[in-house]
Length: 337
Image 1 (cartoon, rainbow, N blue to C red):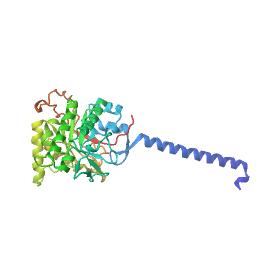
Image 2 (image 1 turned 45 degrees about the vertical axis):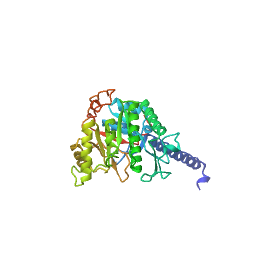
Image 3 (image 1 turned 90 degrees about the vertical axis):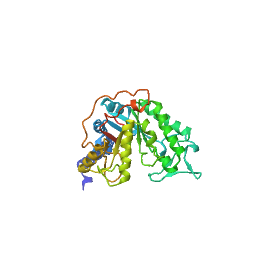
Image 4 (image 1 turned 135 degrees about the vertical axis):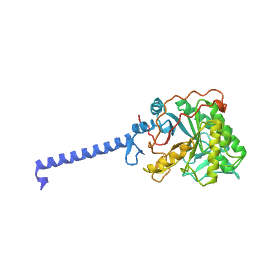
């Protein structure tokens, strides 16, 4: 038996020690690899390093990101490559589980029949907030100031139309417009992207009132057909085109497309660009989450400097967004250099 042979016993002990050391090294390598590589998938077949994600984002004119996922160093790297970087800001609908703001009061929540209103279309659900609350609007504008202080080029105002959609109240609409105006007055040189708010009829169609105040309008889940038999879509699209030409804002469109379906991307891009829109198609395997970077069929970068915005907010002298030919939405960058 081996245990009765001392030489072999010592060899067996050494082998066990070596095996344990190898296992420890494998665990360490795995941890380092998980730290150095994000879980975001760019091509659909491999994970990429955070540094590589930044390199992908440099291929776009405009990047919309979650501010807490981007370090100050990464922000500067993107801006050094002439990428405009705007930060996500929730407005009239905020996550119940992960509330983005502190110091909220009961009066900041929208009440219908004396009850808080939940947006159960999101998972986890959101609370619908009341922009008529000057306290709540101040929270949002102060949050935007903090983003500007970090050096971001602007803000992406999400959920802006939710309070109006749920209340169908003109006072709520007017207060939402006032919120956008207050954010604009924070720093007129910063960019404002409005997400949605174009689908209601007058007099509660938010974009009809915010058009003079914004630089970009985002149309999510854009129908990729160049023409469609849907008269409602056609009428809304034509109205948006008219507003964008009158007030000099650019329309961004986003549509989730299945992994590596390049033909669908090209069809969608060609159709959107035919209207003067700037399209982006994040890849998806089913879940509509902006954690991928799709660099297929991008136009060449336009590195011409955008002129500074004059102090006047007149629509005729607003900062032109014509230089923006491509954009990306990405929520998943990690805090690595």
